[in-house]
Amino acid sequence: MFRKCDITGFEVDKRGEALIKVNAVFAVIFFLVAIIAAFFLVLTRHPTIHLLPPHLYYRFLTLHGWNALLFWIIFFEIAGLYFGSTVVLNSRFSSPPLGWLAFFLMLGGALLINYTILQGKADVLFTSYPPLKAHWLYYLGVLLFAIGALLGVILFFANLVVAKREGKWERSLPLFTFGLLTAAIIAVVTLVSGAIIFIPTFLWSLGIIDKVDPENYRIIFWGVGHPAQQINLAAMISAWYLISYLSVGGITPSEKISRLAFLLYIFFINLASAHHLLVDPAVSPAWKVFNTSYAMYLAVLGSMIHAYAIPASVELAQRKRGYRGIFAWLAKAPWGNPAFSAMFISLVGFGFIGGVTGVMIGKEQTNIIHHNTLAVPGHFKGTVVIGTTLAFMGATYYLIPLIFRRKIVLYSLAKVQPWLFGLGIAILAISMLALGYLGVPRRHYDILFSNAPFKHEFNPAMWFFWTLFVIGGVSAVLGALLWILIVVLSVFFGPKLKGPEDMQIPIVLPPQEEKKNPSHSSILCPGTLTLIFIFFVWFMTYFFLNWKWLSATWYVK
Amino acid sequence: MEQEKEKNKKGSLLREILDDPMLLLFLGVAVYIIFYVIWGIMEVSQVSELPAQIKQIFLTQGR
Image (cartoon, rainbow over all chains, first blue to last red; front, side, top):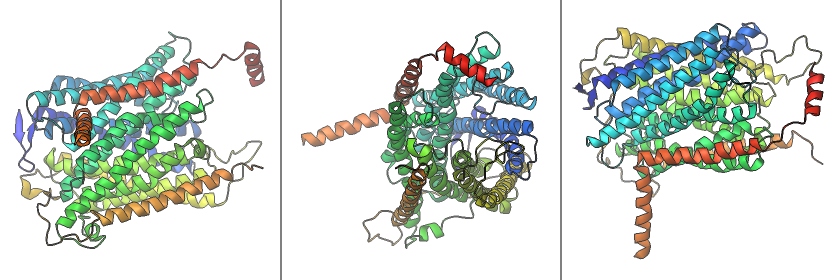
């Protein structure tokens, strides 16, 4: 039942390992679908290219939303949950048959959703707000996928219980598994909300009930739509801690504080879903402001803690190896290790683009200058794509040798891949944010309103950002396709890994003793503190710019 | 001394919470259900129905 990993020393339950592999492989397949759709969308959104006709644009947008935001991410996260609750704990998988049932339910649901979308029976976009109605098979697919994913999450909890009973962990879970526990708790919230809202919607599509109240739908839907992205957040941060540990032997300066940061997510991050309803008149300012401007800030505090703890973990480990100066630890970091570079680009991109814009969009006052503009999906690109997707790509460079037991094929290209994808997405996200600030609406096929009786004159600077948009989008698609090629070739055709000597990216143990570099400074991590200071300068600048732009929106006497 | 004991006690309560996955699950779901779902749905349910006459005006104008 178990094999002993000759690289990590972990006892690996082969039955759980098979489930990790199959979920990870299908995550990549759905990611490929998302990327193909993304390529067409990039070349359609540009007003003068308009590659697809309108009906196919909305169909591909729906397809991209489901495959990128849910299927790719949730399949990968289920693989991660199984990895964190069995391999990392040296424990067995609680019920492999149920694991397979969960997998086939998710797969069946995902295929049904993609089938109905491609058949043109569900052109309702990812949000599927009533009164837009899709074919009943679409809602059935959503329910099957949600039930399968919920079962997968329940199995994660069952694995923890089994591991505890069998003495594999006693008091505290390892930090990586604790981060995944946070993701699993958020997943329960997400999937229960999904069941609450998609069961009546399914019945409505069958004609069994007359209507679904659009406002109630919006509240509960955003209990699915947004927390689904918070599962990503917790899983992404867990991946950052894991990669820091594996690539440089990085350990957080304070495990207790890092756990407290995850606790803030568990309590408060789901409440931030309310920011999707900031312009809805049916809910009061009290509800909006409590859930966003109070609860959300506590969750942001959690992110700030992680944003310090993870680079600090790298800096501490590097300083113990004798790297002096403020940034020597960073300059001498293992940038040739694609897992490390993916992690660090993901961390910086998420903080500087995704995190900062999220705070401004999530705040009631400044939300109004972003609402329904292209800045909103620009923010997603800074969170789910440069953040979560790139972090998962980085983690894969360790999964290929450790779980699939294969060498990484095209390794020299793998070193370039995180940069190509990360920079491409950064350019794409920044251009979308700029276009949003210039008033370009999101989702709209034809922003120039061709043949319409009225016209809107955009600032001519828009065309510069549309060019950047295409450059960034195409670079990111190439980076993603390169990653998929490397993963497929490695997993299915790569040379088998014989032992630790075949590892192209080393697993670096935490340094034990500080090398003749006694810190004369009372500051633990001066380099990280400098980075945090630069981040705060950017945050404050962006904060004041947004208020400036808001003040210019309406002339107040 | 007593203050220190009190501090340790508080620390251990936090640790009890952090080390209990099922308690964390319960608390995470409860906070969300109370502050987001129940409060939000209560507010929406208090919105009065649009008077039929006004509704009719909108429907007629839409044609």
